[in-house]
Length: 237
Image (cartoon, rainbow, N blue to C red):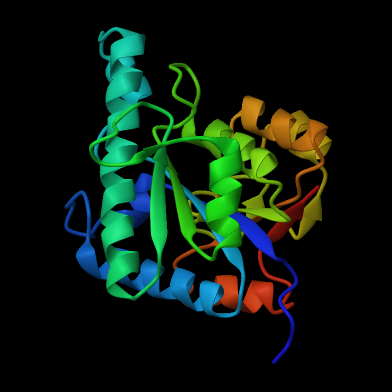
């Protein structure tokens, strides 16, 4: 079998990726499919860290825009990511994959505290590590948390999972002639305001030389094909 191109990755999923088409916050079939794909990566000795957003349950910035205190609303959003992390943990364990949820907020009855060295040790032992509660601080997105954790665990690659092929000059679902970028630099993404991730997340990756691949998570088996060398999505570095 072809040797994987990465030994350790950080996979960033949006909370919306877990939603059912009918609007339910967590679709068990979708979570199960994603868990099966992650398990397959672990089976070929790829170490997987995972950050899941909470937008399917609660998005702090939206509540703040409606008048809620931003700190309180962001804390609610962090708790939403813990719910998603626990759902994914359960699905992975049902596939026989060891997993740990590590939270940036102290919730010791349901998950571990995030400690960088312990997280790396879990990965080295073949456990999936799900990083929950963002950075633990308000005003920072889960994209920023994903960039931070990818750097901290010294991942070979961060994968930003989306619902489109990769990075475009505009939203391809709204602009028919949007240009697809197979490869670009972080400075290009920032200068052109391509909305790949928020500015903080992009700058973190740029300044710490963390390569990122943006790809469609709904294309079944795409992450595995990427890990086996296929050129999928958009590469930013």
